[in-house]
Image (cartoon, rainbow, N blue to C red):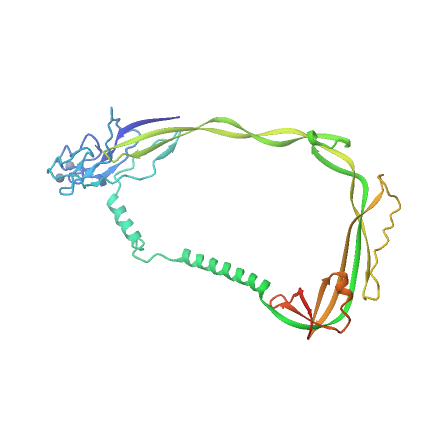
Length: 354
Ligand SMILES: [Zn+2]
Ligand SMILES: [Zn+2]
């Protein structure tokens, strides 16, 4: 919803001091005859505003390049001196913030000092602040700092992954572990929205909980905005938007028990020699099948570690069982080691001198 109304801007005559002249009606000061100056225009307070009836808008006024008189955008020659206005500059618009919420009113802005603003804008463009000091470059320094830091992190990450040296090492020992995880079929407490509860749930209790939110229209939020048209008038626009509030939507949450498989325990076997032949540990499952308290085997995991020594560094590689068995104690091997991380690259393992 919006409505628009046009009113007169105000201006003060800087030659004779007459105040609150009308921007559209008084193109020249009725007191001394001086032409209106676009830089002297300002918005009136709500009490002072004068409506413009049947306003026709041609665009912002143009400024005569010869005598500085403001002319309507639809005139071709200056009404004061007759100079052609084809390439004339447009009038400066007043850009002061002009928005209020409902229940507030506009205060008189007073003659805005556009000349000072233009001067400040020029200083700003030249990189100078108003007291003539160069602007601090702190933001830029910070940006470079962050970029530098990011570069260091990226380079560091690349070096950690790719910067490697060759090492020759001899085998000092072997170790292995084999592990089986055991699942148990047991009652387990769970919860779900009642409409998606598992069919075999039991011992169910329900509770009302917030499942989502919906948007409820909750009155209107209106504001009034004023925009300088640049032809001695401004437009006042009132705009309203529907305001919404969030309202919780409740649903039934079910708390229940279901009988499900789940991790219960692990069994593990280990050894520290190739002669100590790897075996899977006894699971000690007493009840199998599907009953409360029944158990079954879950995941199996095996690790076959070869231990190396080079100079004063110890390394370890987790290998396939066949490779692990074929690397005798004191045999020598070469592999790559991360310069920063000191981690061996076990995929690069090769017999030394071969
Ligand atoms: Zn005057
Ligand atoms: Zn002129």
